[in-house]
Length: 294
Image (cartoon, rainbow, N blue to C red; front, side):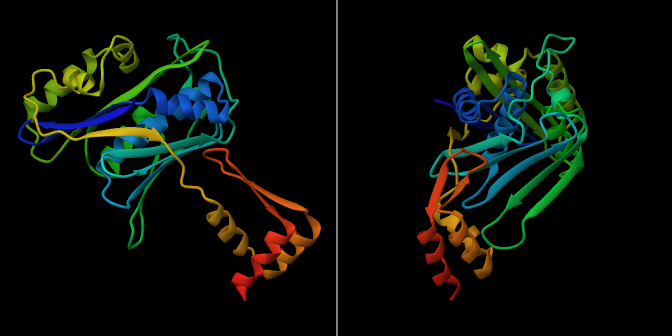
């Protein structure tokens, strides 16, 4: 079972969040039949969404969207609270079969498959307008881009490490860790965190070696005294799509378009981008939606 854990150190001036997301990324890859490089890209983004989702309160929702000029096109991931101590997340790519050879370091060429573009982060609230932050992609590696957003849009210098390990049998390990330097961070605190980040083994290497979310934090926080009052969440794949949402979208097309659809198509089908669930409405059901307009 995937877990996300939070902690803090240095008198609350450094916050940590880490998670193992192997099952979450594995389910995302399965639903979209993602090619290996696409799986690494989407897996990193959905992992980042799950980690940042630990800070959400109540009905708030976080959306991460990358629009690049690489072969994968756009990719997106959402996260929200799905009950007490549970974070739900989902993600997809416009072109799930996008794939490239390994890069010069023998790693998935996530930067190549994403290309140049921008990252948009949207935080939606139950009441009021959503907050939207947009930054140019730093590298296309996702982790660097999330760190750039935190530093430039929120003025929070951060260390972000995300990883997805895939093999012939599918996703073998996935997870990440984020450390954020909050106001009041001392120079020696910053120096120690930077040194730990530079010396830390890749996240997936640690997970394959048996590390859980807490262990990922402990490695990045080596030399710090962690506060014992941490929060632990279950992270899992979920989707917010429903038949009612599909019906509302159809109603939004207007009376004339609904009549045209009901007369020309025996069935109307809609497929969710995030989970690939199919919704089918008969012509009579589409015509019946006219009552909502009246």
